[in-house]
Length: 147
Image (cartoon, rainbow, N blue to C red):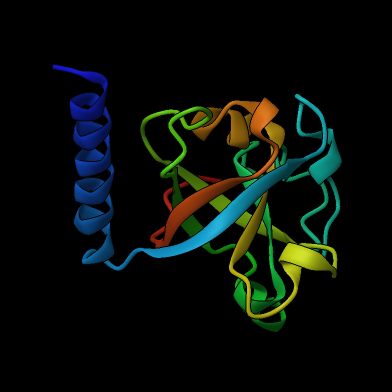
């Protein structure tokens, strides 16, 4: 198979993955990360959870864009997220994160964007940190945690 065939196969795989998730309640958006490797930058936040890790939320947390934050009604909500269409930086699989903060106003965080500013540990489960920003599919899911 020549280079053209490999490229076509890659495009077909990406399109089939988009179709598989598009019908399952998935929306598109973007994700970045903030804070350090230990998620220290995610402490506090607009939802008032203080230290999300000690409160039972772990380090898979996110700040939401204004459109997703919904004036705080999304605090504590869980979202399943996967990196898509970026074969250079994306990692396979999905993660579930808890909304604990509002993404700072400006750029990607402004309406109508659907943006997730993930903790660095959460981001590194779906993409390489060198990417900085990646396209994602996301959907709201039930939260499963104790405490």
